[in-house]
Amino acid sequence: MNNTPFDPEQVLAAPAIVFPGQSAGHAAAFRNAWDLLSRRAPREALELIEPALAEDPDNHGLRSLQAWAFLMRAQLGRAEEVLRDLVDDDPSDTWARHALGRALERQSRYDDALPHLRLAAVMSGDVEHELDVLRVERLAGKI
Image (cartoon, rainbow, N blue to C red; front, top):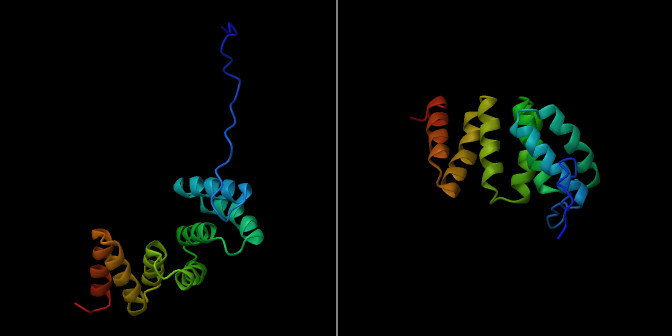
């Protein structure tokens, strides 16, 4: 039996979670950037994402976070560019397709946004996505 008292200063280090196609560095960048974006800190998140993407420019997860950060910063042209690439790479990516529709909507490009929003709504079955379609249809004068 160990009679050593508990030391609150002692820190246990868990190994990094590494997803297929990512190095431990990319996984850490992803986790930390996600945390920053959830705290509404897109500039700081981009500071982590950009170097990781320089090493692995095809990393889908990091590119998605980059698009999210651009949307949060209202850098809509940059967000649109990343999101179009994501949708081209994976047409079944509902989040990227919906986010692309929202980026186009925020640029008042309603007719361009509608196909993406409609497809995302059908793919997801999400009521919020359906409401986005109705809102943009009204803005576009379709209903």
